[in-house]
Image (cartoon, rainbow, N blue to C red; front, side, top):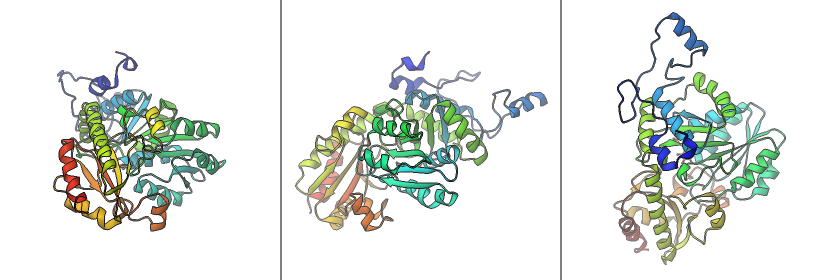
Length: 393
Ligand SMILES: *Cc1c(COP(=O)(O)O)cnc(C)c1O
C-alpha cells in the first residue's frame, strides 16, 4: 500500500500498523522499557546500529513507532519523532537543530510556555529570539539576522486566531537559509498540512486534538528525514524527552477519529461564531471561518475549515467577561483545548496573565476577551450555556 495514494481519513485509521505474531486487530501496546537480545552478537549489533531492531524505549518502541509512522503519513512527512509533551517537541526542535549564538524569529502570538522557553531558558544558552507580528510578513523579513536559523509560528494563533501566510514566510525562510517551523496545533493535518504549504518542520501538541479527549500529554516533530532524524534523534536518545508507549497508544487510537472530530468541532465553532457575531453584548468575534476575519481569504486558501476555536470580546471588559464564564453550567472552565468537552477561558487573567497590560494590549488581548474551544456536545446546548451569562449583561 502506498500511503501517498490514500486519503487522510484512511491514513488516520490504517497507517503504521504492524501486527505481532498474534495478529491482533487493534494496535498493540508494547509497555516495556527494554528489549531482549538472542545473544551477545545481536546485542552488539543493536547497540552499534548495524541491526535496526529495538533496544530500549528511550530510543525506540514499536507503539511509539506506529504513532510516528501514522502521523508522518498524515502530514505528508518523511519522518516523525514523537516526544513526551508538546513543549518537549519544541525544545527538541531547538536543541536538535540550533546552537548557541544563533537566532529565532517567532510570532508574538505563540503559546505562553513557548515564549517562556525562548525568552527565559534558551536565552541562557545563547539563543536569542525576536518576536514579530504573526500577520506582517515584512516584519519577519526585517527581523532576520545573518545568524537566524529558525522562523517559528502557530497558525491560527491562540487566542485571536490570527492567520500567518505560510507560503510567503516559507519564501522568506528559504531566501535566508532558515527553517520555517509551524506549530499545527489548532488545525491538525486534517485541516491544514504546513509541509505542503512550504514549511520545513511541523510541530504537534498531541495533547490537544490528536488525543482529543484530554487524557495524555504528547508531542511530535515532523519533516524531512535528513533534518528531523539526523538533527533530533541524538537529542531525544540522550536528552530523554521521549513519548511513553502508553501515551503513544492513546494518541494512536485518538487519530482514528480525528477526521470526524475536526469536522464536528469546526461546524460547532462556526455556528457559535455566527451566533455570537449577531449578539448585542458581543463587540467582536475572532474566527477564521467568518467573512469578517481580517485574514479570511488566506485562511480559506490554507485551511479546510475555520477550526474549533472561537474568541470573542464581550462589551464591559473583565467584569462582563467573568460574568459570562461564571454563569456557565456545562462548559468547563479550563485552559485546555482540543477536547470532546467544550472549554472556556479568560486569556487576560489566565494563559496570558503574566504578560504586562501593555504587552497584552499590543497583542490585542483585551480584558473582555473570552476563548471558547468547541467540544462535541450539541451546539444548541453550548449556545444556551453562553447565553446564560450574556443575557445578564
Ligand atoms: C498546549 C500547547 C502547547 C504545549 O503542549 P503540552 O503538551 O502541554 O506541552 C504548545 N503550543 C500550543 C499552541 C499549545 O496549545
